[in-house]
Amino acid sequence: HKYTIDYFKQLSSEEKEVQMDERTGEVKGWKWNKITASHQNHFWDCKIYNIAARDIFVYNFIKEYNKNAGSKLEPTWFNFAKILRELF
Image 1 (cartoon, one colour):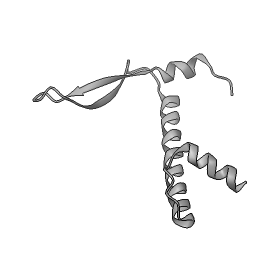
Image 2 (image 1 turned 90 degrees about the vertical axis):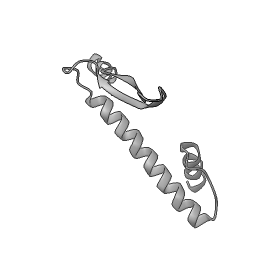
Image 3 (image 1 turned 60 degrees about the vertical axis):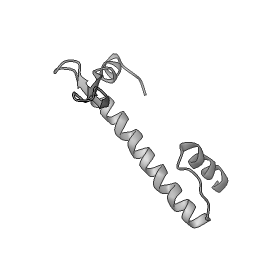
Image 4 (image 1 turned 90 degrees about the horizontal axis):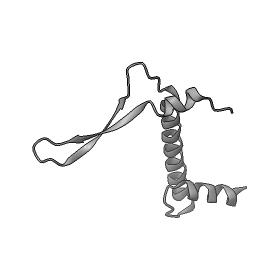
């Protein structure tokens, strides 16, 4: 896969904004805003969706593995790779 300047522009097309509670002054969360309306962010979206899909898959895989193996492994990428090494 060849990375282009467009790829990196899309990865940096948004900025994180702190969301404050006006009453307490405490941080209540974050919001991602496009730097300009014309900036594209499709590669960024795909990257985040893929990370989320991987994390959900690993969580469900290890949950089933724990149920079947009677173990209590944490659902981490490291443990997922460890299980695969043991199986194959």
